[in-house]
Each structure stands twice: as structure tokens, then as C-alpha cells.
Length: 448
Image (tube, rainbow, N blue to C red; front, side, top):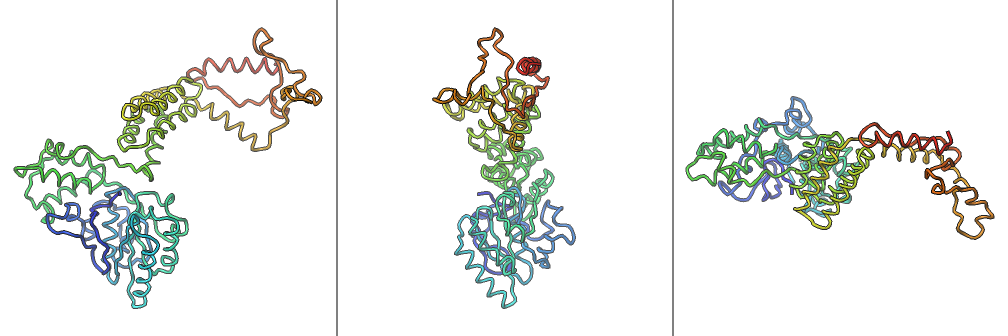
């Protein structure tokens, strides 16, 4: 489960005004939870959402009344902001997780909120992982959100446009949180080192160690604090250096959700890097997908598609390499198959590019869509059944192999498409050779 900034896995729903309560206390509570901002002044990053008079600031300060969907990567502050909203004067707080709550639980909370509203109290309903709610569960919220029985605060790591039903989407403000910058992460770490809620100045952390934690955090404050805590716990003398951090943290977890928005962003970047012939960027995105456990068959399918769509006849062997990589994935499996996927990625990225194949079928399909699908010329029709000759089918057909060149003048397309050129070779790669041949073939076939 993707977790928001400083979100504790052991969080329990709170049912009164004030902050969310957590099990445990003191050192038993994770550092990331202890360092959760207690006010807007402690929130790091998201300045674009927290300016004076902004909808989010008004919500946190208790003057806003719009439901919101907080959308962004893990560790950027979604749960923190929801907790701050819950502290606004005159509001009660209810928390549900989409991983465990069903329609019954949603309706129960709405009934409680309706009774509170009669007494003049507004209820903030926080739903974590709201994108995991089914359509039925989301529909159960609509009336309560529209009539402001509850003030919905939904947190999601996925683009709501793909995961939240349109009626609920239209009734909520969608606020996109950005990944924290390196300076933001560094500020969070320095505060945790000195703050009494954190390490209380009891550890000396080198600049190199801080830099390394910032680098592996990838914009995720929770990940950074978890790495800092693990390193401090491993320290025998109160000193944290880069070697200790490396020993305490295996590797940077790759932010990538195979079922979510990050999935589409990374594969889009992979495709565009292949198309743009940036082999190094393509290898970076390939590595991200492999490290995150993406299905290698999915990667292989994309490579086969790109080999035809973006390379095409400029290098016909690119498709062969991509298909071979897919076979290796099927027959050998991971992790060895990652070499074949890398092989194909390098081939497709470095091959000369041509969109002529995709353009050719696109133009042909467009004509079909316009109704240009005339009758097949009689001499090309099937003549292998009784009565075909009587209908004039296959009469006059000339067999190209009977001609010494293997090609001859003959009409092949329907009448209204005679002379139409769909395939237009470029002068890239192999198409430099095939282009003049296509021109010559057309002249012969069309009798020009």
C-alpha cells in the first residue's frame, strides 16, 4: 500500500475533533510519524497549493467548505494535510481506508455525519487510497458530498481522472501535490535530527550521509525519514556517515505503481525515449520498470510495437530483435530475460527511425472509414468454387511469376483507389534502399 507523508501503518480512525491517534508512544512510534507536521508552518513543499487565500489553506484554516482529492506521489503530504484539515475548528474527523472499508462502513459514517450536522457540527471524512474504492462505493458518497453532509478529503497516488467516477470528480477540487525537492527533503531530515520529537540532537549525521539519503529518497519524505531512522538505529557511537547509511538501506525503492498513474508515466517516457533515439533515457526507464517488478511480457509487447511504429522499414531487423526478446522472456524468464529486453531496447532506440509503416496503415484505415471500399476487381476475385467462372471471377488474372521480372502491369486496388499511395518511404536507414524500389514497382504495376 502506498503511504502518504508521515503516515503510520498502525493508524486508527479518529472520531473526534483533533489529530489522528496512533498506537504506541515515544520510540515505539516510527520517526516519520513523530515528525508529522503539527501546523501549516511545519509543512515542507507544496507552496503552489498553500498560498494565501488558496482553497487548501482555507480548508486547513477552517473557512473552506469544498471536498478535495489530494493527488500525488507517496511521501508528499496527503495524509498530513488531511490531518491538519481535521483540526479545523468545529469539525469532527472520520477516517476510512479504501483497503478495508465497504459500502456499509461508508453509509454508517454518513449517517453519523448527518446527525452531527443537525447539531451544527461538520464532519471531515478522510478516505485513504480512495482510488481503490469500487464504483459502487464511490457512488455511495455522491449525495453526502453534494449536500455537504461530509467534507470529503480523498488521498490517492493515482490520477483521479482515471480512478474516480466522474460525478464525484466534478464535485471535488482536485489538488495535485508535487514530489518534494532535494532541498525540501534535506530540510525535513535536518528538522528530524534536531527536533525533540525526532532524534533530539543525539546523533551527528555527516553531509555526505544526508546527501545519500536525499538521493535515495526520490522526493519521498517518509522514505527519507525511514532511512534516517534505520541508520541511526545502526549507529554504535551516535555518528551516521554514508557507509552506515549504505549498510542500513539496501537500495532506493523505485516509485512506481504497476496499477496506477506512475505506471502510465514511466511507460510513456520509455516509449518517447525510444522514439527520440535517447538510448540512455530508455535504459533508465527500462531499469525502473524492471526494479519495480513490472511484468516483462508487458515491456516486451511495447518493444515489439515500437519496432514497427517508430522504426519500421528503416531497420526491419528491429522487429526481429524485439520478437526474439519476447521469446526469451517466455522461454527463459527473469532475471536473465532482462538482458534480452536490454538488447531490444538498445536496438530500437539506436535504430534509424521511420513512421512510414504507421502512417501507411493509418492512411489506409482512414480511407476505409470514409467509405472508400469499392468492389474487388473481377480478375482478383476467388475462382476456386463452382460457378465462379460464370460470374467472371478470376478471368484475366495474370500470374506475376510467369513474367521474367516477377512483376507486371495489373490493377490491384478497387477502381476509386487506383493511383493512391499509402506507403511513403523516408530516406532513413534501409528505406533509402527500398524507396526507389517502391517507386519503380509502382510505375510497372500501374503501367506508367
